[in-house]
Amino acid sequence: MLKRFLYILWVSVFLVLLFLGVKNGGLLTFLDSMENRTFDIRQSIIAKSHYRKHNPNIVIAAIDDASYEYVLDNYGEWPLRRDVYAKIVDYIEAQNPKSIAFDLMFVRSMKSDEASDNALINIFKKYDNVYTAMNLDNQPQDLRLPPELSLPSIKPYPNTDDTVEYSNCRIILRGILDATSNIGMINVSRSSDGVLRRMPLYLKYQGKYYPQLGYLLANDLSGENGLKNIRPDKEASVILNWYGPAETFENIPLYKLIKAAEGKEELDYDFSNKIVYFGATASSLFDIKTVPVDKVYPGVEVQTTYVNNLLDGSLIHKVPLGVNLLIALLLAIITVLCVFRISSMPVAFCLSATIYTVYVMFTYYAMQFKNLWFEIVNPLICVLFAFIVTVIIKYLIKSRDFDQQYKLATTDGLTELYNHRYFQEQLQVQVNHSNRYGNPVSLIIIDIDFFKQFNDKYGHQSGDAVLRQVAMTLKKNVRLTDIVCRYGGEEMSIILPNTKYEEAVNIAKKLCTIISSKQFKLTNSRESNVTISLGVASIGEDGVTPSEIIESADKRLYNAKENGRNRVN
Image (cartoon, rainbow, N blue to C red; front, side, top):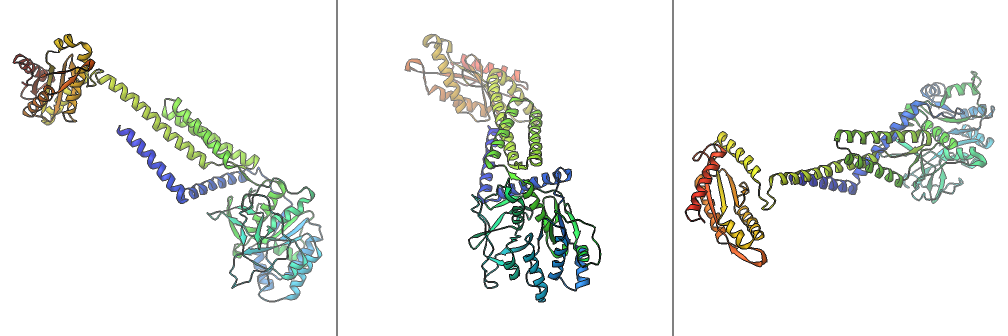
């Protein structure tokens, strides 16, 4: 009973804690962060395997540490003058690239240089394959009044009602806004742990939807066929599929492009048919992200990864919740069957662990070859819970079976008292304990008076009824520590631990009085009085072995019967 209570208590506490964890959201946040971590591990392993290849035609014009130093040494300030960017674009465009994108925001510089700005503006007028970035934010209106955007908006995907909406934005050069519509947003979406795993397709501002820079560029490059295999979530975000750590894409230092564009040095590189992304990779320029495959990852490489995913249709798709729940249920059922059908618990545990390990490997290959994100953590929770609960149920069943077998082995079927074998075992235990520690032990042997004549008069069924009622009366009127047994036939016995002879005699007299004053129900609604005779013996005074005590109690029972019955001796 204690084991069952403890098992039920454990399950109850677990369910209460689970409910509280779900109610306050802490548990769900924790499980979500753990699942994200399993995604990162899978992505890292896949990236190291070099199975997924990035597009070699996507290159980065990297503003690295060397280029940052070169600009400061040769131009005396950062940001770089816009006319230098214009020269670089002219230099690259001469080689017919697919497109050029700036992961940079051309807001007005600290030192006004209208001629330099106009040179860059003319570039956007001159080439229709040049793209640049802008940023939405939530700055207060007392800092900046929200401007209206003349940029073309796009039609959102269905079921993206939770698209992130911004209340303000930082305008880039008005001349660029007037010169081109190739302007996309560069806002990113980080998970609660600060890791960037998703990118928005578009963002909402003043009731309209504006594309992310990478989405705008990839959409234009896809042509009439359009982008495929895009399934955004409710926030209009998609999950990125990483090709490798930082510098997976080819980086060309900006300072080399500056030298080539100004004729100072030749650059042995062919930009034909390339997608060229300008962006900062220097850590001092603060455009560094943490992503699943690298803790230090330049923002421009996030953009190139995004564009690459969109073009080759390799975005990660999270498997629907219903499918994950079905898998978790299936794994839990398999675990339950393993535990119930396999008698050896270590074998059942190892088999369950093996099945789950196979599932984990399946999730890895599904992500590698099919770009599918199957959950790992929630199925594991279900499997563990199913395993623990099944083990508890199995042991409760075993415990119940053991209790039943033990009861059959130690209990008399008619009276439900302990049987003669159990009596002998317990008397030996109590005698040994008394001999070792000096505690008193007494024994009462009881006989129902004239029981044979009673059977002859009223029948054996009535006799059995009397035996049962006498047994229950004895059990109800002794202590819980006293051991009431059926000694044999109509004889019963009571072992009284920590009881001296005088106390045992008083208990025996009380029992004798209770039985004689009670009406016992017979068959056919009849009733009858019954009396008992009792013999009492104690260890030490009457012997030091079980047989000596039983012999003394038997003799005193015989004397009680010889002296008129219904008495104690």
